[in-house]
Image 1: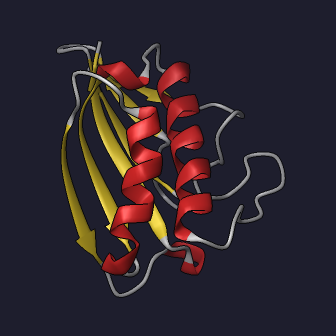
Image 2: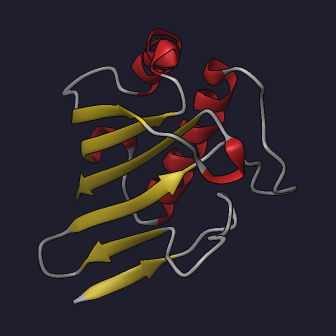
Length: 127
């Protein structure tokens, strides 16, 4: 019913969850939230929300690739922001990764994110 997705090209899970889970019944991929850590060093990349969003989306792209998908396969994302004032900066970076047939999206401000990052994004894709 499901395939667990793991790739060294994106940061490993830091808790009891998978990088992504691919449904073998309906061809859907459920990607866990990605933050701005470098998959090789584990260190957070960037200080600004825009710099972190760039790494977050690179990590998400790597997880999708490991599951046999691309950014164009994403149908829904959730963007978690430590500060809604960062929305425009994150949106600018997001728009470079999603250019056509845009996914549905929600963006919310949260009180805190893992490792005190400024942005986290999860996704659902179909293949």
